[in-house]
Length: 202
Image 1 (cartoon, rainbow, N blue to C red):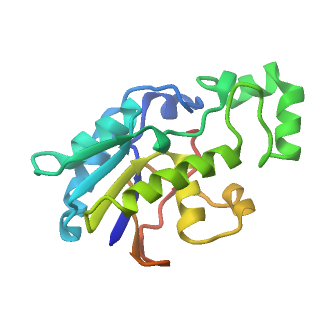
Image 2: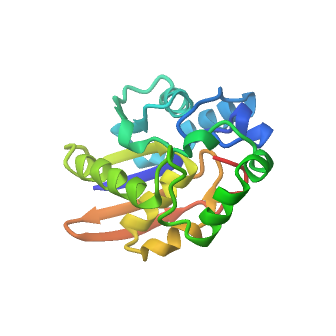
């Protein structure tokens, strides 16, 4: 089977520099256009199923990608963005100011850090693995996953069999950038990647 992965279109909070995490903000007009453009770019890949995070920004992106095409959409909670807990909805400078000590702990050990209300990278990887197993057994050959910045990095770590620690090193892809993999048994090959990256919050 072939799995294609993308990130939701640009949102209001992306524009404002806020961490979204498990919270939500609407797509901007640019974000909507990103999804509509991707709808055209995926035509050669014969997508049969879209599997999306159940957060609204991803669901709306999926709807715009599908457009008038007769493609089912499945909603997976496991594909949500990593939760930052009390940091969700905050700008990074606000996190620095209000949670300086906690942020220092995060910088020292980001892979195991938990601020008491969010997730660790390990927890994210575990739930993303669950979603991938369900997708591999979905019965469709060409699947598009619509998810989020950090969650896409987790998907890449798993599919590319990269060391866990690389999750912090991988760049965040921009909205509606496409990465593709071919899966045959236990073998996974990357078959395409649009080289567009971003540095805006998730």
